[in-house]
Image (cartoon, rainbow, N blue to C red; front, side):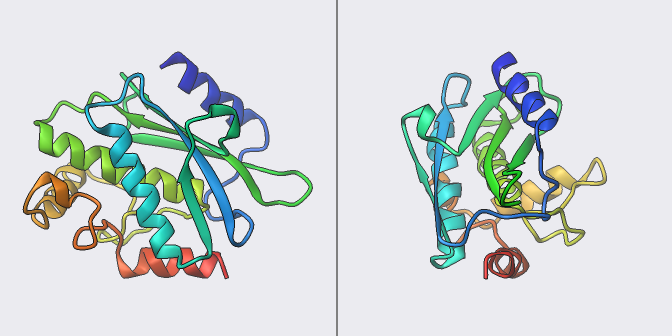
Length: 193
């Protein structure tokens, strides 16, 4: 956990981007490394599904793909314990181009819920935080993955709405339950034109 939090603090201090103010180069292939040390069971698989969901939504505008070599990654995903939030992301801007050139993502590993909801929270948090890593801002639309939780009841209601879409855990991140709204997809495509 200290490693992930240190990385986030460092990227915050060195050229961090405000969400929505920048993006990756058009048609970038973005390598993503996932630190599985503190991941909940299947956590890395759920992050991979989130990568695939954003890649499909982008329709060729960008590609997120997993790498097993940390030094090759432009995005690093960490699962953290005792973080207090579901997740946090720090995109970094290249000072010369103004484009995002790397990002660090932290996802809570110890959400105190039953196993299926834990998987839902991990997937949707990865999807949300990767949205920030791509440059997307928070929204006020409750159906968007980029929605900013404002009230204590938002999280249980949001995760419960998603759970109602599922027939089984295998449906998490599937075509019938991507977690993205039409507005999320439009925001991504508008950012990457």
